[in-house]
Amino acid sequence: MNPYQGPPQYLHNIGFTNNAPQSFGNPMPMPGFPTMGYPASQPGYPAASPGYPQSNYPNQGYPQQNSGYPQQNQGYPQQTQGYPQQPQGYPQQSQGYSQQSQGFPQQSQGFPQQSQGFPHNPAQSYPGAQESAQTGYPQQGYQASGYSQSNTQAYAHSIQTHQAYGASNPVSSTPKSKPTVVPVNPFDPRDDAAVLRKAMKGFGTDEKAIIQVLTRRSNEQRLRIAFEFKTLYGKDLVSDLKSETSGKFEDLLVALMTPLPQFYAKELHDATAGIGTDEDVLIEVMCTMSNHEIHVIKQSYTAMYGTLLEDDLRGDTSGNFKRLMTSLCMGNRSEDFHIDRERAREDARSLLQAGELRLGTDESVFNAVLCSRSFPQLAAIFQEYQFLTGHDIDDAIKAEFSGDLEKALRAIVKVVRNKPLFFAEGLHKSMKGLGTNDRQLIRIMVTRCEVDLGDIAEMFQAKYGESLQSWIEGDCSGHYKKCFLGLLGLY
Image 1 (cartoon, rainbow, N blue to C red):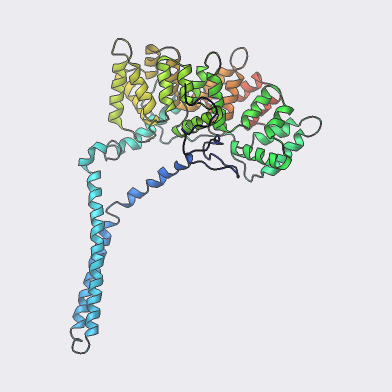
Image 2: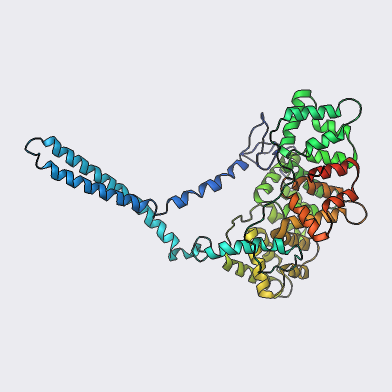
């Protein structure tokens, strides 16, 4: 019997509350709810890094040691002044020695700081060459040029083709994401709650007012509006929206009112529940999330359904695809932005030996490299792979793998090179042909509007020659269409 089955009264997630998180950045943003400990530890890591440069010996150790000697020299002239006055008053001689004694303690303060400087010196010199891949001098050149070359070069290059990962025409700076929905400022949730109440009160519904409020507020702000709505009117905003709307428009509004971690958890649960599995949802979510986001989604999943996300993923998948999902579910990918070129070459050789240079394929090597290396490091590995073989790793994956595992590995490659283009292809897939995959369309539009939907729209235009707006207008209708255009900032 699985000990995690049944109502969520177990204690395996000690340190958290049993409530599902409300957001990725702030687990419980609304007043009256307890805060949870996990995401709050994230801002601590950047704050720890400024401590190391302060211990650099040229700045603190030697200058303070030099300041000690001049004060020692000041003590001796006062001692020579004390001898002529010695027959008249010994206290003046004692004052000279006291000033001399002040010089020596300051000299003694300089030496410990000198001792702090010397241990720091060998760590940067050649004996510390084991860490030179990240902190040593030879790697600084690669950090300056390799990061921009590997992580951003394909972003512009893959507009024309995302099969070749060339090393020419490096881009000097990383692209910044363009959200289409940003938190409104100033923000008065009670005024917004009053607008929504007026729009749904009485006979008929003012859908335009609902769309203009909900599509111009961030997810956290929408949750705050719902909190104030219940405070003022004693009614649940989501329930009122459900009763006043219907169809796909209702589904879109409910998605907008759902906390993002809970929304992802529900998508993953619905993808694995029942007969069959929607592997495309698993790939889209698990292959694109950061470590922190995966941990918060797992926490939401357990709080909502009483089971572990890992158990449900393993129970609904099989083979090497199950191993890949399990590895991604750990949320243990390196998030170091420094690039180790030598290690990238070694990983590229190991991928080549595990795939094209042997009979059959060693899937475990691909699993280990693609699930544990950081995205900038993976971009460098893919570049080294092309240098070694003359062709792209995406072509190698298509030749060596098949089925869901091939889709997942190629998704990781696409996300590493150009995440907005990956989601642009997902939007195109959801609307092309007969019919519309509304669930995929809603999922991408709702989850990416506060992250990079502006970039996704640009990639869509660049790859398919038509605007995302025109496709939505041609594939959707009514208030459903207007709400999507509102998320794009066009309504």
